[in-house]
Image (cartoon, rainbow, N blue to C red; front, side, top):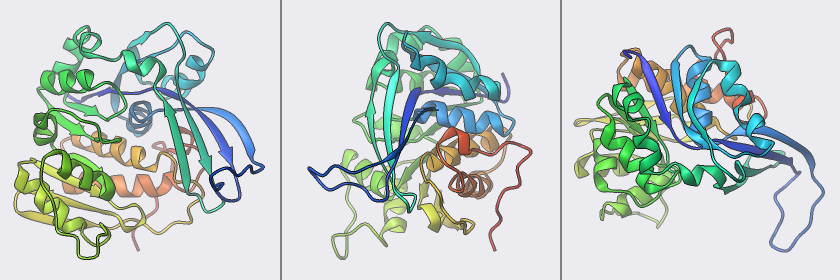
Length: 308
């Protein structure tokens, strides 16, 4: 399976709620929305890669509830292979996504069927994972599933450790690349027992230092995403900046996943990490201009924004 991307990860139904501003503790606000849309970091990344022409196989689980159909609807439309998504008794994973008028979001995730994607579940589809050109992992399935998938991978391993969960250090250090935002980078360094001196106790402005420290720790390559500020790509002794196009953000939900999916798609095609990240930054920016996660992702027919 020369160009196959195997995404081992979460599949959720996203309950979308729109508010003028996020509520304070104990406060009740009126909202709008209430749609159930497909989501989950694994499914988002799989959909993003497939919509751009990637040959994607999804490994994960949904429940036996009505949300399962909604959670996989765009994966089906995008042509993702779902033969390795099993049905687990109980609810499908659920994310409650609250978006304010500036496009900023708060998200609460309930694991549901995703909690069944453990090492035995991954072992059951070992041939798919071990033969894939690129294996993509996140932090929304159990630790044992993440570690087993990383161990089975013989191709390129892309680890987006989001959320940051306790995993064997080998998962982080064999990632090529490790994809994290600035907050996740600080937590991964803590996981590895390493620190970066913060000038004002803030990670803002310390992104390059964190990439350098992750490389020192042994990471093969690192992509640190910074939203509208683009990304930093560290490989060997080099750290390069990748700018992002300037767009008017409508909803940032899932934009980071669009970036990872696009990155994986280009890596499967043989592109370098820096070239793949430059393309992914344009895809992530496009996703910010539409509402929702997967519904906001571009297809091959869409024109991506360019860096001015």
